Every structure is written in structure tokens, then in C-alpha cells.
Image (cartoon, rainbow, N blue to C red):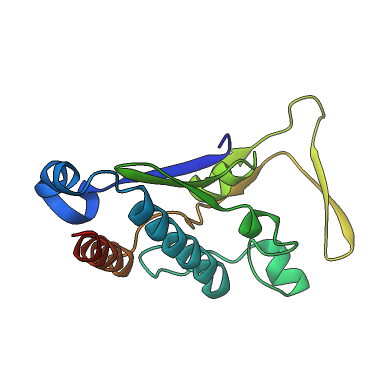
Length: 161
């Protein structure tokens, strides 16, 4: 995933007992895949509610303010690109879109070769020297995600034993 990703290890939600758990139950990949699916659903919900993992609202984008619609959801490419990869002790969630990182972390965009950045907003062409993109975190674990991940591990272990 070249854009941005987060990796969540099992110790994020089961504490120090993960090594013993793996020794007793073996590979946790199926449970990690379930957690990844749950996290994908959480990210999708964040795009619907325009909030970060802590429930804080994202700053509205100029496009959403001028044209209507939702922030980060014009064509749904970013939202639709979120995937996860499960492993024996962790799950990695992210996207390979190059513009994902500035939206997650925030960025200052300046022209590389041109004298100005040129784009369209609200049907008119705008030229500026730079654009500050505020961070709008969509990846990450909420308190509810942590609780649900722990429940998934507990249910998987109970079923596995």
C-alpha cells in the first residue's frame, strides 16, 4: 500500500497475553481478517459522518462548502480504496492512492513547475500559490473499534478451543 496505512497488532486489544494465545491457538489470521473487515466498516462510517476515529468532525472542504456534498467524497475513490491485509498476529489497513496521505495527515501543497496551482471550484477557475489541506483522519482505531476487536479475538479463541 503506497498511499498510507496503519498496522494494528494483536497486542493493541488483547494485552500481554498474545504470545501465549498464539502458542495455544496457532495462527490468528482468520480473526485478524474479521478485525480488518470491521475496521473497513468503521472507515466507511467515518466517510458517512465526516468524523475522525475519535468522533471529531473533519474540517469541511472548500469543494463541499461551495458545491455541496460531503468532504472527501466527491467521487468516492478514496473511500472505495480502503482495504486490509490480515496476518498471523496483526492486520494492516490502508490505501495505495497517492493522495491518501495528505488527507489523513494534512499537507501544504505548492506548485512544482508552474507559477501557481490552478483548479476549479464552484464552476470557476482559481489560481493560488499554495493550498493547505487540513488533516482529516479516516484511518485509525476508535475506542469502539478496540472493544469490538477484543470481542472478535475472544469469540475466535472461544470457538477455536
